[in-house]
Length: 178
Image (cartoon, rainbow, N blue to C red):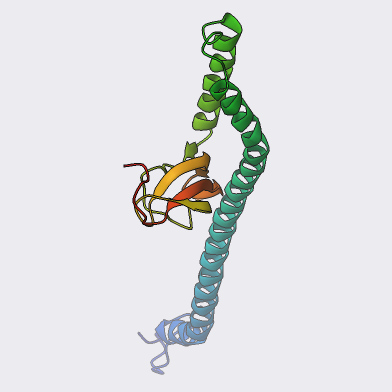
């Protein structure tokens, strides 16, 4: 497009002016696109960092709750041991008294509370001795390496040993429990 005066020059505001303006804007747009990409990247890293922080915080909170529960349970296990010993020592003449049944009910309720808290007894008698789950306190005649008696029950919470079972391990000599 040319001016009507015949000089052959484009009028002001024509295509060549727009092209020059576009050429000046191109580096600015590229710079803005680079900056936008950097900001996007920083945003995504910040979101990922926040999610990781939240996950770690949740994990730490769960671990703290598990630690607290374990420390409380460890303090109550001797009470359960005492209840068990008391019930084992009840003479057959008084075994049917109401107060003995009351103690049995307390013991059952106590075990129910432990179970609902995720506490499980360690199965030991008749099992192969496992030093991660059992504490050997003596040997007796019986199958070698096998638990022949449980002296004190052991417990786990979520697969973690709270207290190992204190056990008597077979020595391999004949004459033990079959």
